[in-house]
Image (cartoon, rainbow, N blue to C red; front, top):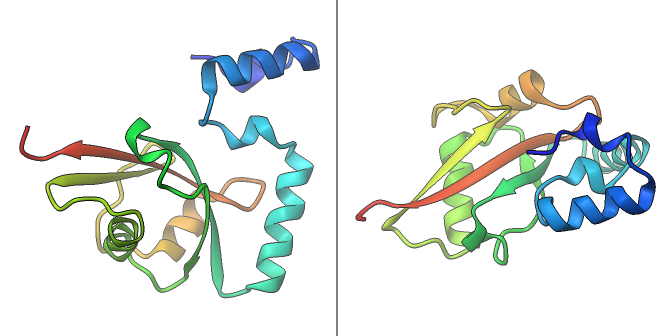
Length: 138
Protein backbone atom coordinates (compact mmCIF):
# COMPACT_ATOMS: atom_id res chain seq x y z
CA UNK A 1 0.00 0.00 0.00
CA UNK A 2 1.27 3.46 -0.85
CA UNK A 3 1.17 5.96 1.97
CA UNK A 4 0.56 9.67 1.43
CA UNK A 5 3.96 10.52 2.91
CA UNK A 6 5.62 8.28 0.33
CA UNK A 7 4.00 10.21 -2.50
CA UNK A 8 5.60 13.51 -1.48
CA UNK A 9 8.93 12.42 -2.92
CA UNK A 10 7.55 12.10 -6.45
CA UNK A 11 7.12 14.89 -8.96
CA UNK A 12 3.54 15.94 -9.68
CA UNK A 13 3.32 13.81 -12.85
CA UNK A 14 4.56 10.72 -11.06
CA UNK A 15 2.17 11.22 -8.16
CA UNK A 16 -0.75 11.36 -10.56
CA UNK A 17 0.50 8.23 -12.33
CA UNK A 18 0.82 6.34 -9.04
CA UNK A 19 -2.53 7.66 -7.85
CA UNK A 20 -4.55 6.57 -10.85
CA UNK A 21 -2.67 3.33 -11.38
CA UNK A 22 -2.82 1.99 -7.81
CA UNK A 23 -5.45 3.90 -5.89
CA UNK A 24 -8.04 4.56 -8.62
CA UNK A 25 -11.16 5.40 -6.63
CA UNK A 26 -9.74 5.32 -3.15
CA UNK A 27 -8.11 8.39 -1.66
CA UNK A 28 -9.84 11.75 -1.81
CA UNK A 29 -7.03 13.26 0.24
CA UNK A 30 -4.52 12.70 -2.55
CA UNK A 31 -6.77 14.00 -5.30
CA UNK A 32 -7.41 17.33 -3.52
CA UNK A 33 -4.97 19.46 -1.56
CA UNK A 34 -5.48 20.06 2.15
CA UNK A 35 -6.42 23.69 1.52
CA UNK A 36 -9.03 22.72 -1.08
CA UNK A 37 -10.57 20.21 1.31
CA UNK A 38 -10.62 22.70 4.21
CA UNK A 39 -12.24 25.38 2.04
CA UNK A 40 -14.81 22.90 0.76
CA UNK A 41 -15.75 21.60 4.23
CA UNK A 42 -15.96 25.12 5.66
CA UNK A 43 -18.22 26.23 2.81
CA UNK A 44 -20.46 23.20 3.37
CA UNK A 45 -20.63 23.76 7.14
CA UNK A 46 -21.38 27.45 6.62
CA UNK A 47 -24.21 26.69 4.21
CA UNK A 48 -25.52 23.66 6.14
CA UNK A 49 -24.57 24.14 9.84
CA UNK A 50 -26.71 21.20 11.01
CA UNK A 51 -25.21 18.66 8.62
CA UNK A 52 -22.14 16.42 8.72
CA UNK A 53 -19.88 16.45 5.63
CA UNK A 54 -18.88 12.87 4.81
CA UNK A 55 -16.45 11.46 2.26
CA UNK A 56 -16.75 7.79 1.32
CA UNK A 57 -13.04 7.10 1.15
CA UNK A 58 -13.03 3.38 0.48
CA UNK A 59 -15.69 1.20 -0.99
CA UNK A 60 -16.18 -2.35 -2.20
CA UNK A 61 -15.46 -2.58 -5.90
CA UNK A 62 -19.03 -3.59 -6.78
CA UNK A 63 -20.41 -0.51 -4.96
CA UNK A 64 -18.14 2.08 -6.58
CA UNK A 65 -20.44 2.73 -9.51
CA UNK A 66 -23.49 3.16 -7.25
CA UNK A 67 -22.21 5.03 -4.20
CA UNK A 68 -21.75 8.79 -4.20
CA UNK A 69 -18.42 9.92 -2.87
CA UNK A 70 -19.68 12.94 -0.90
CA UNK A 71 -22.67 13.00 1.40
CA UNK A 72 -24.31 15.33 3.90
CA UNK A 73 -25.79 13.60 6.92
CA UNK A 74 -28.10 14.84 9.63
CA UNK A 75 -26.50 15.25 13.04
CA UNK A 76 -29.13 13.14 14.82
CA UNK A 77 -28.74 10.17 12.44
CA UNK A 78 -27.49 6.89 13.92
CA UNK A 79 -25.15 4.46 12.19
CA UNK A 80 -28.04 2.04 11.57
CA UNK A 81 -30.08 4.82 9.94
CA UNK A 82 -27.07 5.68 7.77
CA UNK A 83 -26.75 2.03 6.76
CA UNK A 84 -30.47 1.94 5.92
CA UNK A 85 -30.03 5.09 3.82
CA UNK A 86 -27.14 3.46 1.97
CA UNK A 87 -29.21 0.33 1.31
CA UNK A 88 -32.22 2.17 -0.07
CA UNK A 89 -30.37 4.89 -1.96
CA UNK A 90 -27.89 2.58 -3.66
CA UNK A 91 -30.10 -0.53 -4.12
CA UNK A 92 -28.14 -2.89 -1.90
CA UNK A 93 -29.93 -6.24 -1.64
CA UNK A 94 -31.13 -7.63 1.69
CA UNK A 95 -28.84 -10.67 1.40
CA UNK A 96 -25.81 -8.34 1.26
CA UNK A 97 -24.28 -7.00 4.48
CA UNK A 98 -22.98 -3.46 4.62
CA UNK A 99 -20.09 -2.83 7.03
CA UNK A 100 -19.02 0.69 7.92
CA UNK A 101 -15.60 1.62 9.26
CA UNK A 102 -14.66 5.04 10.61
CA UNK A 103 -10.99 5.69 11.20
CA UNK A 104 -10.29 1.97 11.39
CA UNK A 105 -13.06 1.27 13.91
CA UNK A 106 -16.40 -0.48 13.52
CA UNK A 107 -19.03 1.74 15.20
CA UNK A 108 -22.08 0.25 16.89
CA UNK A 109 -25.44 0.71 15.20
CA UNK A 110 -26.75 3.04 17.91
CA UNK A 111 -23.85 5.48 17.70
CA UNK A 112 -24.85 8.94 16.54
CA UNK A 113 -23.13 10.20 13.41
CA UNK A 114 -22.53 13.51 15.21
CA UNK A 115 -20.52 11.63 17.87
CA UNK A 116 -18.45 9.93 15.16
CA UNK A 117 -17.92 13.29 13.49
CA UNK A 118 -16.71 14.97 16.68
CA UNK A 119 -14.48 12.05 17.62
CA UNK A 120 -13.10 11.04 14.20
CA UNK A 121 -13.34 14.06 11.87
CA UNK A 122 -10.20 14.83 9.94
CA UNK A 123 -8.25 18.08 10.26
CA UNK A 124 -9.81 19.16 6.97
CA UNK A 125 -13.34 19.03 8.46
CA UNK A 126 -14.64 15.90 6.72
CA UNK A 127 -15.58 12.57 8.25
CA UNK A 128 -14.01 9.77 6.19
CA UNK A 129 -15.97 6.50 6.04
CA UNK A 130 -15.09 3.16 4.48
CA UNK A 131 -17.88 0.88 3.27
CA UNK A 132 -17.57 -2.86 2.71
CA UNK A 133 -20.28 -5.04 1.20
CA UNK A 134 -20.35 -8.77 1.84
CA UNK A 135 -22.75 -11.53 0.83
CA UNK A 136 -24.44 -12.99 3.90
CA UNK A 137 -25.41 -16.31 2.35
CA UNK A 138 -22.14 -17.32 0.68
